[in-house]
Length: 185
Ligand code: IMP
Ligand code: MG
Image (cartoon, rainbow, N blue to C red; front, side, top):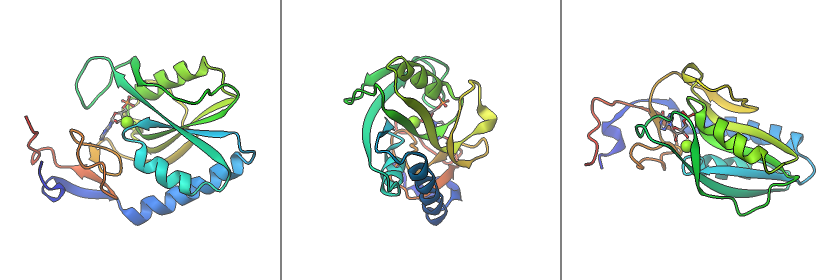
């Protein structure tokens, strides 16, 4: 796989800006969920770096759990509708204050489907925290209760977001220069 520097068009959100916004979100969430019933639900795999940093900035006692979903059909870089659960939560969310932690809301289909399937389990509350919001691309109406940044309609990578499963480790969010990217076959 290519070095990220060869396909980086620009750094959209640098490490310092990311971390200071995540700190603010952590403070806000700590205030809103003081009673220790909070369960952070991370959607694998893109949400992992954000979950880790966010959780460290939430001073209120909370739990965390993980789930993985896959969208049915279509290309790798977009989703069109229903998702299926490929790895379910371990924790029973009944009566918990569930906060979904996502890297990015793009069309909104992923979050819309996950919200629908978790609501059935009767959590006490169910909200969404998304680091990035590509609002221009929205097709499904989804609430974003905590939003890190609204970003333009560009394909981004780093800080959880991948390009063919690589580059999730980068500490910043960058724009991909797709003309320079050579996908591995
Ligand atoms: P949605 O269902 O269209 O909202 O898409 C959500 C998923 O698409 C995200 O969780 C990401 O995994 C992926 N995705 C959307 N936009 C980008 C991007 O710019 N870079 C990397 N992954 C993306
Ligand atoms: Mg994702």
